[in-house]
Amino acid sequence: MVRQENHQIGFAEAFVKQTFINTVLDRIDTLIDWEPLRKLMEAQYTLDGPGRPGFPPVLLFKAVLLQQWYNLSDPALEEAIDDRFSFRRFLGLNLDEKVPDHSTVHKFWDRISPIIEDLFQQVQTQLEVHQLMVKNGSIIDATLIESASRRPTTQKASASDSDSTWSKKRGKAHFGYKARIAIDQGSELIRQAKMTTGNVHDSAVFPDLVSGDERALYADKGYSSYKRSQWLTERGIEDGIMFQGSKWHNLTPAELERNNDINRIRKAIEHVFGTFKRVYHFRRCKYFSLVRNRTKLFALCISYNLKRSVKLQAI
Image (cartoon, rainbow, N blue to C red):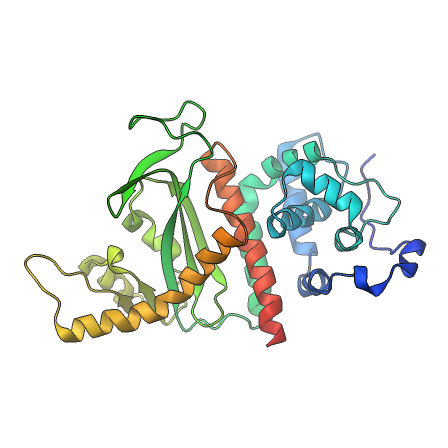
């Protein structure tokens, strides 16, 4: 039998001390209307056919968020939910109720993979309703994420992760994937995201990172080109891409000063990537496929945006 949604607080919970309540989780829980997310996931279950999970999709989705915030493996997540009152409270589980096991969470990742970007966009839509997006400008950048597999000794594909590819940055070889994001200037909320293999050039996914309603777009010189500048101008977006010099053209003092101004703006996105790597430990992939790692990236973006939104509301 499928477990029904349960938002009732158990009798025993009335006696739990206030110190066991995680106010950040409570604020996130009230920030989002989970019903539209539930509908998206329920629709995906219908497409997938029989075999619905024994727990409500919103409960499992919240469990995935906890997994990102606290850097937990599937088995560690199961243990933490069973042990922590604040986790149970966030999930809507009474103290005596069974928690989802690690295999259920693992299968849920596969369930939501086709709609993970839709879930991200739904959360973003709700954050816009709260007027947390500034939309003065977008800042875009990319970072290399090492493959979960052992790096091959030669420039060949990995037997365990065939999607990982070789790339170079500042003359150093990397094996894995490339995560790209666009953040909102001012709020530092993530507006767009894209996960590709490591050998895909930044220019190939540039349009996917532009929301279209920002006043300006800022990017490093790796995105510099006349065509991209024209593309932005045609859409009424101010071109904030840094100039790139060449052996035929040294940048003028005015161009160098403009680059410095843009670089100061761009530092905000370095803070976001720093959070990904230091707090969420997203230096190295945990999965062996582009599909799974793409789902991981969007789950991180949703998790980051929710925590960032709570901080913005407190300012």
